[in-house]
Image (cartoon, rainbow, N blue to C red; front, top):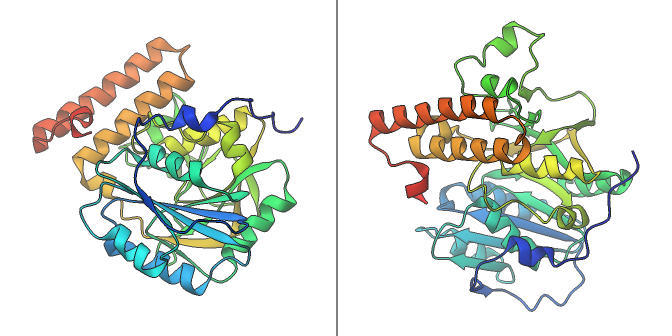
Amino acid sequence: MDGPKAAPDVDLWAAVNSDPEPLPARGNPREAQIDLSLIVVTFNSSSVLDGLISSLTNHPPSVPWELIVCDNGSRDDSAALIGARWPDASILVSEVNHGFAAAVNLAAARARGRWLFLANPDISWGKGVLDRLIRFLEEHPGAGAVSPRLTFPDGRPQPSIRRFPNHANIWLSRGTPWSALTHSLPWIRAYTLPDPHNPARVEAVSAASLMIRRESFRAVAGMDPDFFLYVEDTDLCHRLRDQGWDVWVDPTTTVTHRWGGAVKQNARLRAYHRQSVRRYFRKHHPDKPVRNAILFGALSLADWCDRVMTGNQPAEHAR
């Protein structure tokens, strides 16, 4: 590998945070030296924040750190819960939901740490986890980001490693009727992959728990805010790869994620996912218009079926 490409000499933060009015923030003057910036995006998350609060209280990183929370229009007390526990946290409060990627960018624009830890509000971790992830990036200078192994609360491994979507494996992705073929026919190149036994370079990982260099995050202009929800992490990993950075998973480090598969139960979330799949294929496979048309036709049929069955509006109107 020739090494990561240099970041372009432009104001990347302005490019990824284009809201005309900044969201209100409260927190400390943030004058101290910071090495790690923890970024949490909340949306009606108060019922699942206990694990995150407990982990950060009992197992904080050993390096100087800051906590930046972007609340995406919650109607509960998510922001208040975190603010009460950490009065010096930077809490950005929006009246509307700007989407996950835009919220991460907004928080990252305020970050001062060399390392950014993207943390879902429903994760928890044990002693030394954040330090080990930082140390991994320090020991692997070509690594732009590293993910721990994700598990369900009962200890079962949680699928979080993916290949980049293409017109073959997308039909075998999680939740499709044909995903079982990836288990029965091992020669099929699955979209979602099992955890390796040792640290390994991978194509894409989940952003539910992701340690990323601020340098590499800036090099790709952050997350793409056109992804309202879902697939923004895969797109981020794709652009990191394009800039010469490696993405790793370290299965020796574990984070618990209370992932409940809500997308399978909620037609609106499924519509958001399909919307993001369209965005990804337009962006990364623009040279395959016929295959895109076939895929988009199938996604539109799924949208129509959901609307007929549930009466929900399509994702465009839900935003």
